[in-house]
Length: 145
Image 1: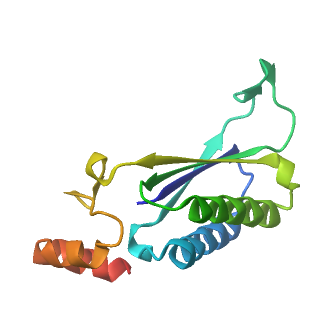
Image 2: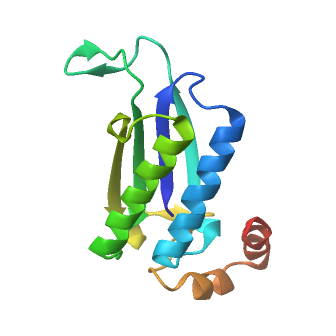
């Protein structure tokens, strides 16, 4: 955890831009929260033309939405820094004004999520958690890290 789902118009982001955004969000997550990069994932969703409405009207602007799911336990300052980082990263990468980026963070207790097939650890206990996993699961996770 965390998972950041980025939704924008179809073909809005190039593959290179997606890679850059994913790397920056992951790096900032690790720097701001101290969490390991092997828990951070970034998923891009394409919104088909004619499928996005704001205020009941078809949206005719470049709006990008990010919904982040994170384990509870982050400080208000950490959450604010992550949101600022996400908005800055997306706006810069997409060459849009910050007003075009909407970002949300939803917190979940660690007992309400499963990662790599196992209930997630409490924040700050990621290393201990990794060491308790079956050898093949821990090896797979370490290969990503």
